[in-house]
Length: 410
Image (tube, rainbow, N blue to C red; front, top):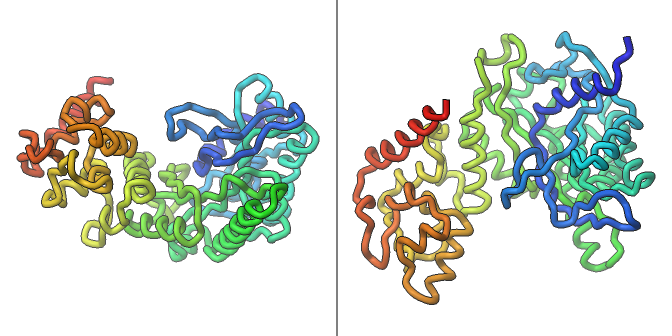
């Protein structure tokens, strides 16, 4: 019996949830000629943007057919599931109809692999091309680049998509060969490097020539599956740092491995390692926005992040000799390292102290989480009473109320 579009949507939207490499676009694709949508100044993601806005997108696979048998993937060829595929026209119609009903603000499109990388990517590109050229759709489009894609195919994808992603999936070549022997890291890094060069070249051209066509203006991202293989958080975060520096990625996403079936190649997990996934995101944030180096967050002596406390608090407890920090005298970089003080609050503190002494009440009003910050700051040379606490007490006083609050929710 032939599957309806609704049936396909249920199956392929559910399968797409395993790919988390979608984010705010960073694109500036203006609406023109009274077209549909506008990606300017607006991030498209699957949950919340950095400024707190909740936004939505149609996130689907083109098909769950796949020629590969990756142990961690629900769409692997050996898995006994119902196989369906959208036509190009069906995805285009869904996107336009959902957008007009204000259900979505853009499209995130990935796919299982039909025959090979180029054949699959060409079908994804046809969808983006139809949306742009035939429907004048100016909303956000994120396309997955299948590892092994040719430069010609990637070049066309970059013309029509705001962001492209090539998923690394498994953090080490050794583990990848064990659970996905048909794949290798070279087939991922080759398109990553090519896209990096093309994006940089396009940005340079756009500075010289006003009418330079856009090429993946939102850059590129990738995803790593966490918990399916034995790599430590130290290994994963160092790899991420390398991807940010060498491939100039906009984001690295961490996807806690979701046990989908029993397989001797995979660990017997009862549930996805979501807390570990969250800690990796927090550590990633410290690296990208707070000036931390990976080896300050985690090192070989403690290769995995503490699951009970966030990595910023963990750093402070291991380096109490650097605290308390005087909010009226310390440089911005040190204020950023105080647990409970974020980027905006640190900026407000530095700006405000130009006009007078910053007080405890001021810091609280600026948005600092004082239940954490009080242990690590002083006001004009006067430490707060909590700043004399030993690490074990600080840890207990922060962790226990948090656990108690979680219990009261149920």
